[in-house]
Length: 534
Ligand code: G4P
Image (cartoon, rainbow, N blue to C red; front, side):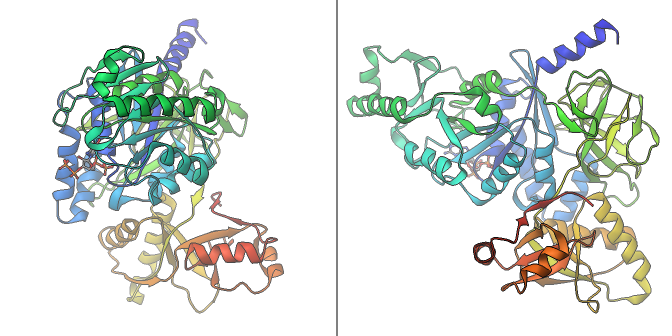
């Protein structure tokens, strides 16, 4: 490879950082995203991201929303530059559109930011997404938000993270007061206090007042009680807290914690600077040829998400590809590992906020969108040079189950075709009863919207009207060792067994409690919450 190209790739890798935000709805993801973009100069006035989201929310019919999204792809990745780093923020679908895509996006990220509402602490969606991060040993940076409002004690919050998630913490900064008495944070990296100035909504990037811990004015600024409390808390932290260990951070075993208030734009830049210092560069990936480093000379990547175009007149799909190695160039041809075909990557798109911009080149850690006339499936590898295949993207434990019925026998063929294609595309998982008389497919989804989208698309694209019969389960586990292991285990209470698309046994439970009961009573039965595809 020419030296210049090698250097170009190495430089691109060294200057790129990507991450996804994991949070529960309302923790402040939109607000934080917006403030981060503000620092990157990607938007000039806070409010732009939010306004778009509101627009989406305001569309009363969610299908219209989907249509709109299918065509314009709002924000799958947001790129911005800060201190010479190119930062790619991978947007994880949230709210009502929580789906397997949310999990899959994490498969394309090198870092994650766990955003927590200081008043609420850990919430269900955050816990679920955390588990997926753990499977990949993704570094997790924690931002505790909304300090300008009354919230829980900082020690209590870090204790919750340590105990519940089993994640060691290192507070990079520490809050001074909270709610009405929120005065700022102490940055333990520089040993300086950043004072909070209450102002409305912080629509511009803010400079903050920085003061030394031993500055005599500090006691006056903070008032005596908070001042002494801060000193005491810092001592406790030094005593009981772990030492900062970047290797453990990169292994996903220690989380650096930051406190702030995204809405008032406080603590965001401190966070961003530390993040850029500690975050992991575009990572190596495991493949059929072993570990492939990002600086490998040939272009390679994998598909982690497909976006259907909801407009029936344009039945194309956009495939989102994580660039793993090499340099992507517009119109290049690549090999498609699964089919062995040669594919020309024309009409590539850079995905940013307002729409699609065309893109000429991309490097490891970047995401590109390609129009996909049915070529790509989730997990597919594209490559140049030696043949290789990246580890696929697994099936994640679904939580919503329903029989899908086709009341019109004359539509049987279209129904089957639709279900097969939508499953292959990764829109939904499909399972089947073990009872031969119950032939209706069971739709298994992570979010309710997935089921609605499948019904909508069957009607629109395959002309099949369907009915849904919900099933009362909320937890699925694949049985390690297959049917033999299941048979050996004998009768399992409070659960039913079904087959996944590849005929493997899956146990469905009504709730976590029933699952835990079985795990306790039958320790020999090994159950998995994710499974490889096929
Ligand atoms: P999400 O994308 O995670 O769902 O959260 P989003 O940013 O929309 O924030 C949810 C609500 O929390 C918003 O209030 C937002 O203004 C508020 N919020 C976000 N960060 C902070 C913060 O640091 N401090 C305080 N006090 N509030 C915060 P809303 O009432 O839904 O919207 P709005 O009327 O404020 O725009």
